[in-house]
Length: 301
Image (cartoon, rainbow, N blue to C red; front, side, top):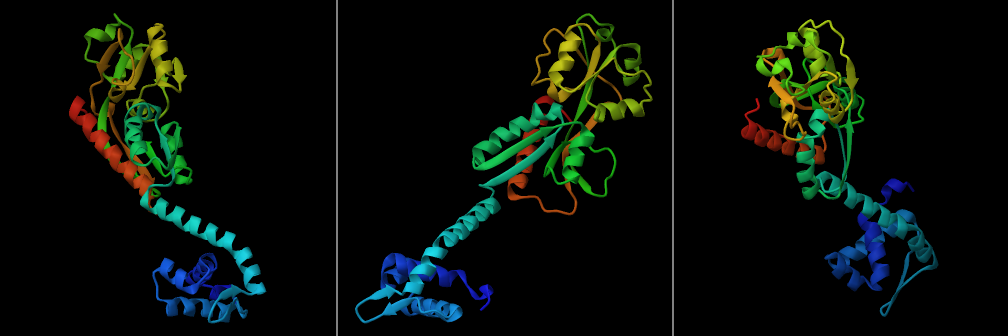
């Protein structure tokens, strides 16, 4: 006898008869006719080759083999039902896991805004958010460590698909009274000053495309560190305009950089050859809404 012959409805019918103490009660619980329920139990007995119940006109009792079988299978049946309910909830996006990778400049603003709404809508989904350089977050999606990356992609990738959400413009952030305050800055101007470079990524790419050869004075991982170094008079930094609403830039000079290379195309990245989960699709939609709201309020893009 192959285990593949066992069917869930047969096992469930058997368990409900045991729990109910009668075929009539079990039929009512399963919302089937009593003959249909009896047929299910009979099929199970035929498949396993063992009589499970002693039936008389007055009572229905488990055989010794039936009792042993019930004791052994009831835990497995509950686990199967729990697994079924869980995966069904995952399919609906109410359970499961959402793994994200994002640029720090986006994690501090757009992603946080979308996650707040997502958490309210899907409290049962566990969320993992990793911050990193642009090449790192793209690699996380490529390697299956993250379902979505939120960042930039300036060249085509055979494995990844980019969905643009919005555009923002890079800006110089400098100490108060800095010469940049009265100018119309371009990226080439960065060669005159000590640069505090925030994370390799879109900014690094723009500097390379502008043929900037002067190395940065500082390379940092966090937005707050870059701003702190600027406040200390240790140089200027290039930050995206979209972080202005989430950072304290009071007392600093913020000047939008002119030219097409100073525009960042930002969005989310997924693998081309896979379908994202219901939770990831729901989060992507919230990202779109947050990006639309942000663009409407500050004119970005």
